[in-house]
Length: 164
Image (cartoon, rainbow, N blue to C red; front, side, top):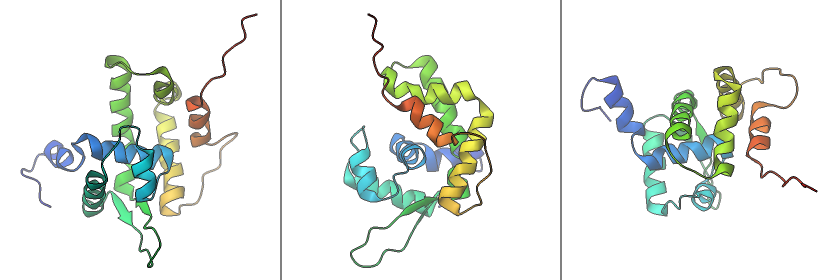
């Protein structure tokens, strides 16, 4: 699809500019939801099946996702392309803006706060890990838990502290 103008911001907005597209990408990136049913049932915002199907088609057509071939009776698996992986800094920036300017529940803000606390180098580590998961790249060595393990730990519900 050709953008309406030659403006790079317009071209990006035409692909990424609605909330459902970014939320689908969020769920693929952070929750590793790669099948239609997992994306549909895992959406805390309650995406409708027809909207999800449309956004997945658009993301594939735009080169953000690939759709694996599925034999009869099997589910198609979606994977991020390099262009899809490179949406992570955009999602990170939107999340930081949301932390600063929008209300939200503490447990859902923890992952974004953890990413902010880790900084831009952490976003690069996450993208490297996405390349391993989605593109079959060789893993880069790291000490301790990987970036997604660290995010999962930050996003996990915290046990109440006994104040006795």
